Image (cartoon, rainbow, N blue to C red; front, side, top):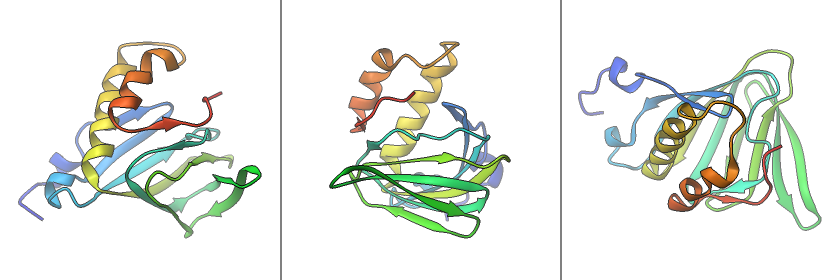
Amino acid sequence: MTGTTVSERAAEPFLVMGVTQYCRIRGKDTGGAYSVMEHVFPPGTGPAFLHSHPAQESIGILEGEFEFYSQGPNGKTSSKGRTGDIHHVGPSRPHGLKNVGDTVGRAFVVFHPADVQEKFFEELDAFLRTRPGPPDLNAMAPIFSRHGFVLIEHPK
């Protein structure tokens, strides 16, 4: 690590579609190799819609009960995840997840490489803070496109 303090790394969280995301290790601290975020999911939240992005993603569940989604030969599939489980998603693989429990869920998420995800979350967070109400997918589409994100399903 470079000399970055915890307060710099854990400054203002990203708020994206109901999920609070704290960047615990920034890509600038790892030469862009990876970043580590802590995601806090209130019950019923998470990107349950199938989507893909260029970065690999490893999700370690700290608390809660989740459903992970992927795309199989016959369409969308799901599997359960609980505290202690780790779920890995390869680059550009369709996936999604949702907190299906009755309590707040928490997960550490490692993105490799770091920059695509961090820049995407920064831009999406800034955009969503300027627009109250449900997310407007048409207005968000250019942000997704700029960062290589593909919506395979639309959020409900």
